[in-house]
Image (cartoon, rainbow over all chains, first blue to last red; front, side, top):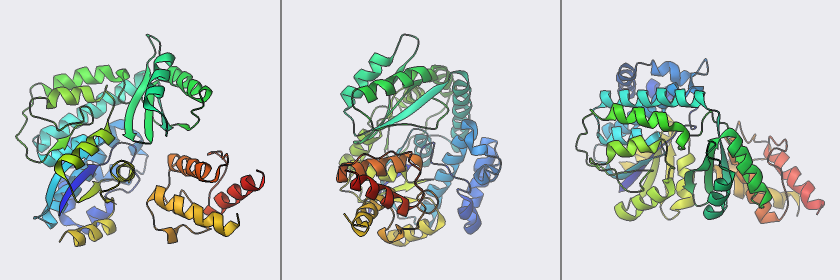
Length: 311
Length: 80
């Protein structure tokens, strides 16, 4: 059986995530300890979220990637024969996927991720951004309304193409408010403002993109085997385009549905599994590639059931 | 529609949206606490119910349990 792996994105975090794995598996715990060293965080403390640490972009990004990456390694450790057809992550989840595929040295990759998280936190603090989910609407129409609501100073546009029924728009808060009002006027009423503190995947993150490009420039890319599909291009990352694509990723829309369709069509997994907190991607998968079963593994019990199935 | 019929419909939609077994979707299950839905999930569940039953629902109406959803749908259906 060949599996396709989906790696959770930001927003899927919950208090106590990963803790059950740390308690049940010595191997998992040792992975988290090593990733703590590399990221400069006490990740177990972040997982516990006692002081709402996970509300901060600079904390939640390393926490989610560490939880997911350690889970991938645990799976490889417990089921060495597992065959991975391809991987895709949503935005942040691409870092989990690339680290799982070993496109970077783990320490360098975790440092890159921490730099991204810090830059994004700075940009989110600088300009008030907003995002809103738009359900079951026509892409072209939503895009046209966003153009109408944008001004040269205030951008709003489609930031996430999540599934055939879900788009997310994002941009400067006042421009997003204008777009939401216009959508309602045009009869597109299924719009919900999301509780986020930045307009991810819009030009508002240009400073992050530039600083990331600088950070990436001297880094070594390692040859990796498992295909990882990019949200930005909709096709697999290559060693030649990896740095540029990751720098662009923060200012370009994510095309998760398109990437997942590419993965399923070209690498033909028998089963999709979401590794990491939440089950958002499992749901997107069910809306996008309904013919392939999808399951989520975010706690120990689901993990046990999953590996039973794999053995 | 009777309450039982509405419950059947609600179970079907909630189970599908939240990826949980239908038997977990009981009248006294709390949508956010027991079924782990976020506000976007509740919004989508309301959308699906609107489409299937041809009624108008507000996502921010104060619904906490499945029973609240069933009663809310019943009220809107009766008012049609």
